[in-house]
Image 1 (tube, rainbow, N blue to C red):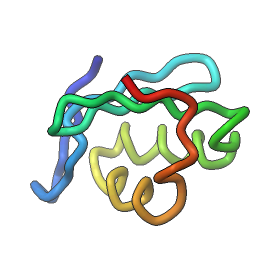
Image 2 (cartoon, one colour; image 1 turned 90 degrees about the horizontal axis):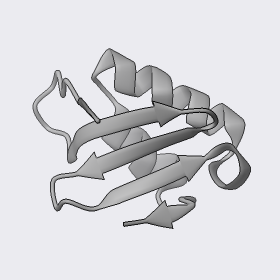
Image 3 (cartoon, rainbow, N blue to C red; image 1 turned 180 degrees about the vertical axis):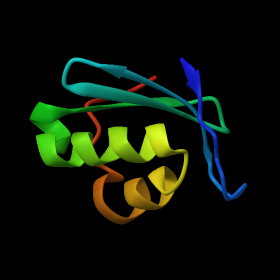
Image 4 (cartoon, rainbow, N blue to C red; image 1 turned 180 degrees about the horizontal axis):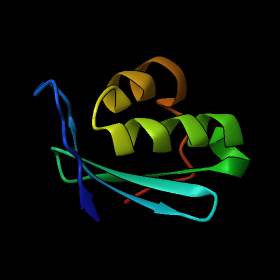
Amino acid sequence: MIAYKNLNNDSGVIEYEIGNGIISVKFRDGKIYDYTNSITGANNVIQMIKLAQNGSGLNSFINSYVKKLYARKR
């Protein structure tokens, strides 16, 4: 996984990993959520990847748009 930059120092996201049609996001509580094209929606996954790579806005986007649209929680 890649450390999330958290440029605003206010995110619950600490790490992420990008795959083919998937982004996995690790939160401060240690839980990892997998967001996929088929469950979360391709446009949402694309946006999440952009936010993850920019290091800002990912946690807010998840809470606002895709909070329960994850494919798997581990």
